[in-house]
Figure 1 (cartoon, rainbow, N blue to C red):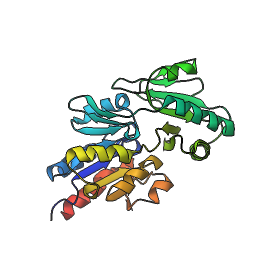
Figure 2: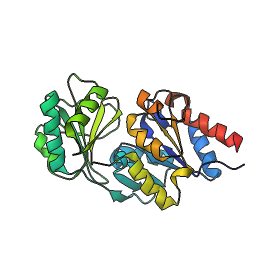
Figure 3: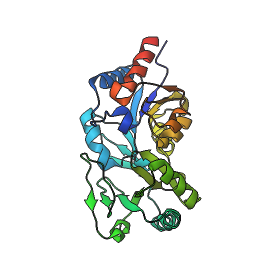
Figure 4: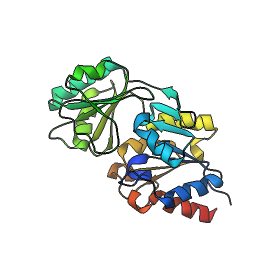
Length: 268
């Protein structure tokens, strides 16, 4: 037998990364063994390139990465963007006004396009701690002054699932709304998903959906699971993702990716 997949697609937060934002030695070894068996590894993350690059550098990763929920396909070895899709700012502004008409004022942040695009954070937006660069702005109008790949929204009372559901209902077909992690609800270009970017990257690698195993933990991974042949949810995954996964592994803290890859390598 041979290794059954040519592509291993992994989300970062809550999946490949442990909670301290490191990748375990065991998981690194399992990914290397899968690569030696002929399976390329591709990172597929909601993070834009500037928030992803230091992790890729630490991994010694020089292949393609899908960033910003599929908006960016980044060549880590060449440090350049191969594709970059931006959010129509006029549509995004209209969508936000519709959401606020339903649920009241939102706190906003915005991710600027480009290799060095800053994340601009408006008043009241709660930023997660970590080595992620952010620029705080008092005037929300500053967020709209340059091309964006996404807008982040938070509500003072609604939880992530409730906010995402209300926003999705309010915006109709103007934009897409995803819940990407704790405290992370995003407004994206309509039709954009991790599957969009992954399919572009896979095509460049000459790999098909039927050759792909995907690992994830949040509802924004659902399109990627629908695209790939086999979707594996982490034990810590959101219930909505577990509901569509082919299997569930151990948590990101317990080397869930390695557990599955080691089993497949033993069986191949």
